[in-house]
Image 1 (cartoon, helix red, strand yellow):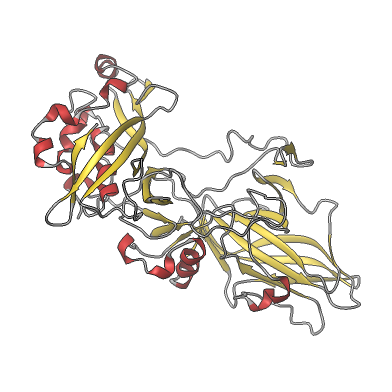
Image 2 (tube, rainbow, N blue to C red; image 1 turned 30 degrees about the vertical axis):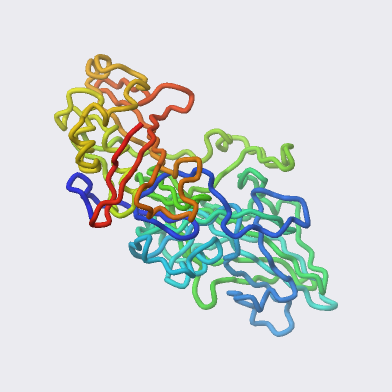
Length: 473
């Protein structure tokens, strides 16, 4: 069900196992649903954890394109669907409600495998495994790996995003590629992201049969969606050779990252939490990068963005004055209802007839139980934490814009089953935002280091199965 003030189009993202709704609330206590095996090698937070038996790499659901030359060593590439790290999201080509996801979509590997089977594509970040096997008695050298875009770039894909969190160990040659770059060639990767420095600068990969060379390729796309092939170049017995790698008989695909605020679901120990934020799914860049706590040589690039800024992106402008928050509300999902209430009651705009920063509470009444809605004062906790007073906000003709919100199950654990469908559900809700004045003045929505307004909410299931907030602390 969609409330009148929440009628505009919105995107939804689903992260991890089972799901309870279509609205988003930020990650809190995000966990890996399918725990990795104990690391046999040094743990690398940025590097992929992929359980690959190298000898059977070609037989494990591999998507590949081999050179047609008989006897020439083979090079293959496939999507890494097994619990990758960095996390990889999959955007589906349609809107999918949480309760429509099958059991097969639970967990990291399950959600990515199912999403790809449904025609989805990786979102913001993609992980590929490139496997090169030399031939006996052959001298094989790889000196270039790059992406080649097929067709024209597209806008970031609409639809529902299934998000995934991974971790683990690996013994890969790690490379990165940025498809938004005019030269999408292989880049050095550190434990804190993909660098701006070329990998094949005085470096080569030598294939020593029968040992295969396994390359973990982190592909980034932020501004646009792309179809692409991976081009591997080198020499076989001193003669130049190239391999064009794709997903079976079609190019690999990846979606860019939507700039508008979006609803995103994240898995937690207690079930699903929801966030309402921007730039979800964007890859991380580093300059310089580091490994094992130390700067990685050759990764500092003059003129490239520094780590604290990452990729320069234009933030989405504030919505036009008089625009109510854009939210799709699933009334049967308590986290969805709590998100809608927290965002709506914290959105102040004189163009909507608001006289004070707390007047959004009136628009949030549809999410309150009748007994609470009849007592306006009880629905206003949190205003004492405001960073600025009513008079200052009014003097600048300011309005508030909520940039992020999170909702997650309250603790101690009130949901021993890990589900959010009990008759009474207790949640913690937080919002972050900014006041924008007509004269250019800005101020944070809330004071304190965290910069958020936070509430403890009690939601009660109604006879029709929907949830309403029955208490606010």
